[in-house]
Image (cartoon, rainbow, N blue to C red; front, side):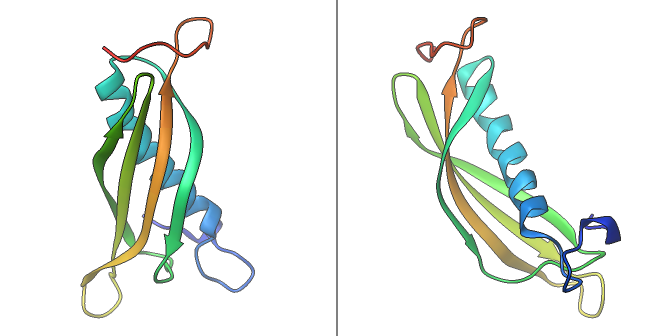
Length: 112
């Protein structure tokens, strides 16, 4: 849930907060696929379609779109459920992020 502490000077939710939520969602599916630790190496695209407001509930949906030797690219779509008014869910953000599987020395490792 987007909280008052997450707002920017205009009173909307700070874009960096939403980027963090998207990165967490993407890393979870990448980690599961890699069967271990991953690091974010690129934000290939990030589009803000609609603002997020205090009280909105954010849901992120992920899909792996590319698998390389050591990397996984994940598409993340974030929806906001508006609790004020209609309770509709609308697409607010879509992003593509690339993660690399790393070993205990933080060096790239092949995916299983």
